[in-house]
Length: 395
Picture 1 (cartoon, rainbow, N blue to C red):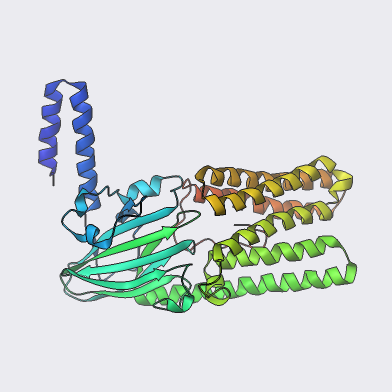
Picture 2: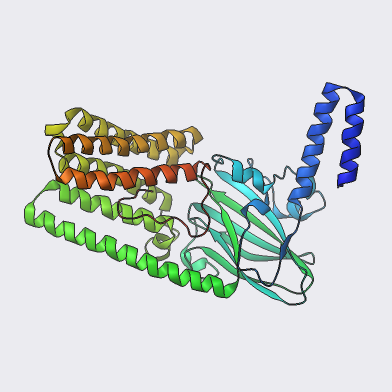
């Protein structure tokens, strides 16, 4: 592997050659070699570590043909494969769904054993395998975990994939993931100090309990109002909140932990169906709550059309995995909520006081949706706690 002094010598020789073609070729080659050197650096773990997100420190490759196996990745020829630096993945907008391999080496230079919790997140992962390599021995931490497998087959019953690992003094281990994720590729690996992970996880569970409790109370309250008043807007709101609750639970892994736990369920199909229900029930709620037939008939047609378009795109993304559809879907979804916000403003200006409350809720919705879409596209990064959505936030 090239060192800095050798790299400087090569650059000097290239400049002296005064050949543009040679310059471009050698600079490209040098960049690739330096990228491989950066990707191969160990991740040094110290005993004071609290939490470390591994994403940008793991090299990865896209196995488009799905022809690679573990033996090819741990052998002497593994460096000849097209490994990419993790920083490139962090800067990408959207990664194509499919099969990816991730690799990283953890090193303990201290005099004591370091215990860690390794967490792999995102419920969109269909299949996840994790291998630990130490002293040329391969240990399978889990295999075929993810949506396509039953929840009971996970090594530890948790909404995400977690594993305890230990680093003995002056030792190193290599971790290799095999991840198949669709319709969007999402993957996040984090190592935690065990007690910190337990404390944070308990706090999160408490928050989720409060969140789901509020959503259930709102659902039952509006269902009671529907039976009492027979106004269809309450019924559409009940369906909207119910589907949003499922989407939140699916995004955070609780739906697959407590509801659709068996491998026989088509979990992605259920998720897409709930998305479609959510789009359309939100549109119907907006139309009836604001009485758009009276105050804004043109926006009524536009909101319905955008809801149908978003539904068709959601179905298309699920069935085809066509990447441009994701961008179109994000745009149509944003337009749907922007149109609802414009409708609320028009109705409020017409003198309907209740439309003001709708505007406030929609402003929160629109700004949160923009942030969510920017995160999906990789424009905005979020660290720390995962996103959770309030009552009127659609994932």
